[in-house]
Every structure is written in structure tokens, then in C-alpha cells.
Image 1 (cartoon, helix red, strand yellow):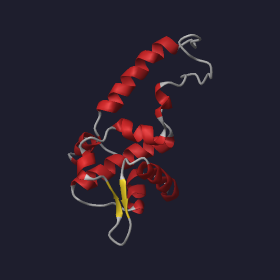
Image 2: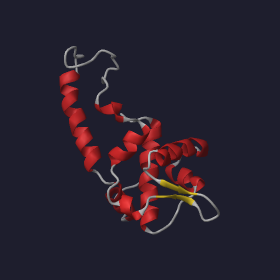
Image 3: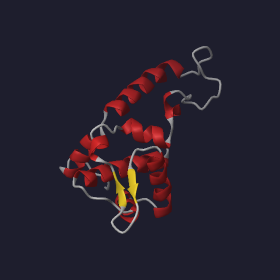
Length: 144
């Protein structure tokens, strides 16, 4: 459903949120290692997240990536997905057809429209801070 970049972006966002709650910034190398992603690929993903104001980047010897406290409580999965994959996932054809619409639906258009609406609600209502709390408690894992 999501691109590989988006999957890694979600993992990175949860990890950065977890560290930000402890007032820690995280280095590119630490993020890449934790989410099991190549450093160069992770750098591009984080750059996109910074550009879209999902996370913050601080330069210098004590720099790294973080999510400020004000943003942390409001940041949702949809913020990360929109920053990396865009909002097209809520409208593009599940079969990849260019002309799929209400007027010219593909064979699964009607059924998938319902699922797409549910996915949007899930992404909008799932806060990154909640996911990071589950991670900190050991209820969820980013590495298996």
C-alpha cells in the first residue's frame, strides 16, 4: 500500500518521536541502523520529512533529528504518509488505471472506495506519540 520510502519514514517517525519524548536528538546513522534502512536512502526520506515540516533537523555537534514537543502530540500517521507518498493514495485507482473515477469506475472501485475512506480515518486518527509509547512499553516492535 505504501512505498518503501513511506514505510521507512513511518518507522523513523516513531523512533524519532520516542527519542524526542526523552529530549534526545537522533543521528542519521542511528535512525538508519534502528529502522534497518540504508543510510543514503534514510537521508533522503528524512530530508523529505524535514522539508514537509514533519520532523526537525538541527545541525552541529549536538545536532540530529527531533520532533518538537508542541508538534509531537498532534503528529499523525497521515502527516508522514502525505509528506512522503502524497495524498494520491486516497484517490488513485487500486488497479493503476488512469481513467478510474465515479463516472468510469474500475471493477473494484466501489469496494475499494470504502476501504480507502477507512484507511484515511485510521491514518488521520493514529498519533505518532501513541505509537512511540507502545514501542517504549515493549507492546510493539520496529525490528523483528
